[in-house]
Amino acid sequence: MRAGQLDALVEAVAADGGVEFDGLNANRRDDGYGFRTPHTERTGLSEAEFREVAESNPWFVSNWFYWTREVGLGDRETGEADSGRRDGASARRAFLRWAERADDHGVPERYEALADGVSREWGQLCVTATVADHGERRYHLRHVADAEADLSSLDVYTDPLEARGIATYDERGRYRPLKTAPTLRDGWAFADLDGRALVEAVDVVYPATVPNWYREREGRLDVSHWNETAERQTGIYDVVDELDEEAVEWIAESCCVDSQCLKRRMWDADEETELDADRGDGVFPCREPCSLVVAAARKWTTLEREESRTYEFELTPSEKEQVEEIIDAVADGRTDEIREADVYEGANRYRARFLRAKRFDDEGNLSGTPTDE
Image (cartoon, rainbow, N blue to C red; front, side, top):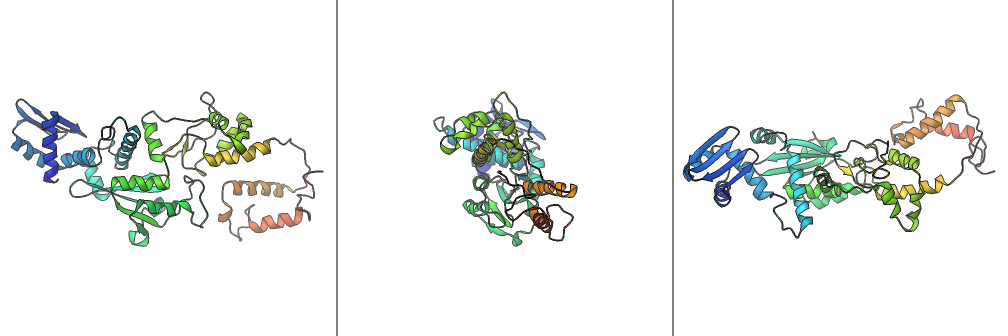
């Protein structure tokens, strides 16, 4: 604890008559100063005695100073006219307290844990909070796959904006149109960040997830359901409102699950009609159908206009099961995991080529059956 932190506490008590924060209660009454924590209670103190007691409880003082002076009180640190900045500051503060589990543990237990580092997962991000000598927090950010990796084995960054390059492409160099897809590449770290820089880096990797998570905690998440989202589409996307409720179920089942997106779906067909599709287990919420879902829905809308037909194909039982396994493997993104030697897998590349050679005609028709007569 720095002397300036104790001076700030004395000034705050003198100005406001007292402070109360995270188990610390410091006040000034007619009979003198009072100082109370879950482990200490003293009243009727002179200022010198108050300072002496506070110095013997440095964690509580430095903790109060960090959250109220360095991070700020959030809602109080900006004027009423600037609600956007105020909300952003509150979200940042709430996220930083979440990172060190401030709501789960008292100050002494927290400081002991922070000395070794407290880690939490935010999608595919591992956020680690630590504490310095005078109560300042420092933060480290890396991929969950690198949680135990030595820092020397990773590419280390300090500028939060450098996260753009990390979040833009997957490990194979392919563009990631959905930033919350579970395809974030590993092998990097942001070390020794302050709280503001940490939240900025997280926002670059997963845009708007911190403020939406905070609004949900506060009961203020504004959810835009499918029907509302579809009805406001224009241009080439104007057709998506043609999809019926069953098709919307299929959309949610296809796109809005943990294997495809790390958000937790909060939108439904409309406010009264809840979808049965799994919502996912992500820590941060999805407040509306994303642009990728709307773009896919446009294609599905045109496909759903087609009338069903009856086709006759000749397949062995094993070939029928193989077609099913191929569809499952493609849908679950497992084709890259199936090696050439895994010939017992239906989606094995050689088995698929054998099936094509056997059952496709020269025009590429399955069992020689054309799509259109």
